[in-house]
Image 1 (cartoon, helix red, strand yellow):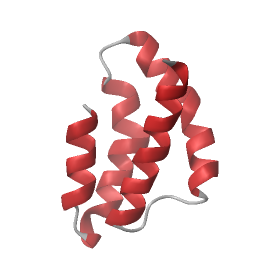
Image 2 (image 1 turned 180 degrees about the vertical axis):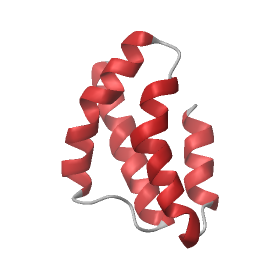
Image 3 (image 1 turned 30 degrees about the vertical axis):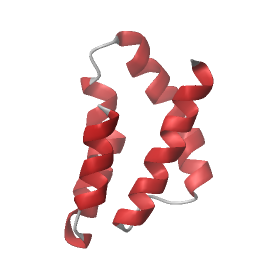
Image 4 (image 1 turned 120 degrees about the vertical axis):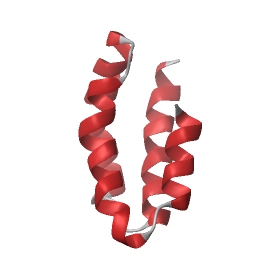
Length: 77
């Protein structure tokens, strides 16, 4: 999943960043197959949003946001 999300952010055009943000904020927390992972993702969202300071507005910011989320996940492992 991480590879797909990072690849999506890497190739995302400026016009499609809002769709990517929707994916990260709304879709991913609903479609993760593992119930525990879904809950952890949802719990991590506020911390990642604070750390990023705002929703991603560029592909680069989306990559950074994803790195923050992956960092949150890795702290639980």
